[in-house]
Image (cartoon, rainbow, N blue to C red):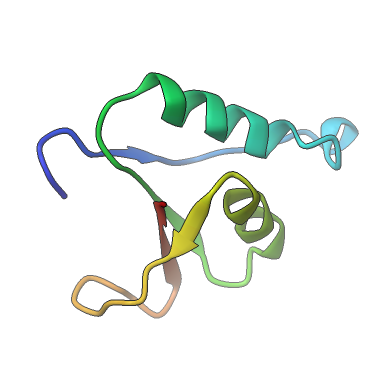
Length: 77
């Protein structure tokens, strides 16, 4: 990661608020306010989180190096 890059992590939406596009909205809000590139690490198999980050404009990292089997890495595009 570069000097101005930042990580967004440990996101959670209460069950009563799921399905209302809050997660992608908040991610978009954060990434518009912050400088640098946003990075998210998502546990493999967390389909709801994957869907939300893609909806917010992130893309799955296609490289190697730091990728681990239990995480998927997403960068804002």
